[in-house]
Image 1 (spheres, rainbow, N blue to C red):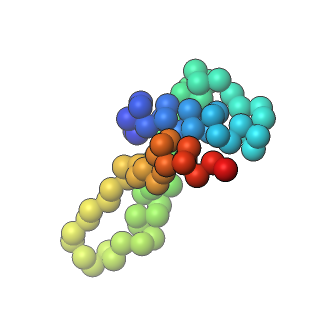
Image 2: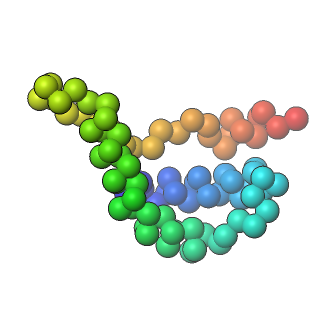
Length: 81
């Protein structure tokens, strides 16, 4: 499961910079409940992708499902006109 600070920073970014795209954004508590409820679904999807994309004859398995930061708040603020 992603680290709590990652989940909050993603939520915080959307609430600060993308609220116009998500006018009915749920509160952080409900977001966290839904995120926890979806852990099993996300794991199932990850395993399905793994099974489809990994060569079954190769014994080496390395799957990194850690979130990767694509943009930081400081960078986003500099890009605002």
